[in-house]
Image 1: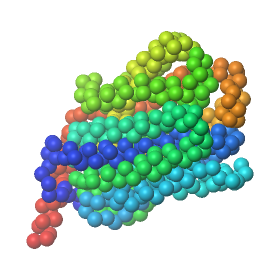
Image 2: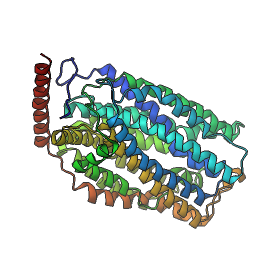
Image 3: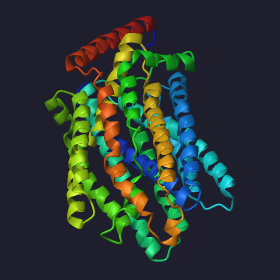
Image 4: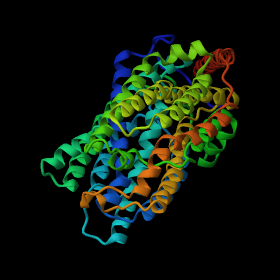
Length: 477
């Protein structure tokens, strides 16, 4: 049987130092700055700057996401079976890998003198290597949440603050659209702009993420599994994690395109639609970010994290439908649309906290069932799901862009897209996500979330760990 011990600091509520949580949150901010820039703009860069055909970009990134998704559980299983020093299972990946990830992030936004196929090969090779290192870092960062405290409520507090940090990093990356417009209007070449922010958000974000290494592991990660296969098969003991992953994946099956396309082509009451996207992101994001501060109290008030997830999607469906009929083609309507999406995002921003809290609790349950902790393979499923969802989304998006006649040279030519394309932008932008929300609610409703059961699991684990520690002392004597 595997032995799990706490280190020698006092245990109980409040055992996680605030300065450690701050370092952890800052690290997540840096990592999300990089991820948001790469994930949000690399496909756009390939289509509009490298001029790779839209459906090729959609297919290529779909295939790359599928491969990336497959290797994530393998990475997680490797982490679970890797021999490590006590209380140092995940932290090494947060110190040594970020500089490599940052350098690769910068290289992906370079203009290269190749033909279309050569550019495809260049991007794919860099992205494959980037994603491999990123998977190790991402599993380490989020897996650390499960090891941050033996108490579910305290882990939820940590999840709350690191989610704020992650959101702050994504918000900073969201300023790219506005700053890009300013720099290009001043005469800077668009390729130079992308390279500049590859340096700031790509390399700079990853160097900032190294702060997370200062967060201690307060639960011992345990003895490694005998094989990667055994590490993977432990997932069968975790129905909560599997249901959360399936629910998140279902959100990718909807007809939508990136926000950038909508704001560049559908906003007609102003010539500065690109900058309006930044304004839209700030106005719709700030209220939801503030709501994160009350995530745990809200979840407790309405009956748990599962209900928080269901309510967030019901809000999304209801207010998106209203926003669709309000429209966007005048400044007052645009403002009203922003207000409605802000309401959508109030509970929506809390979903990540709920997912991570439920996943951390499920790892405790797996330990109780099997005697094994599985931070690596469990949080690798977060990556797996994100990338499989990305594969589905980009494949659908690529097909939609071709079907609607998207002109990938319009940015250079300074022209709008066709009236046919603009006509279908609004329903895809506003109602497309509703399809995914309905599927999500159906699947997530099967997750079990019971406070009494969770507290019972913690009591049993506490007694087992104490008994194992006594046994270890007796053997030593």
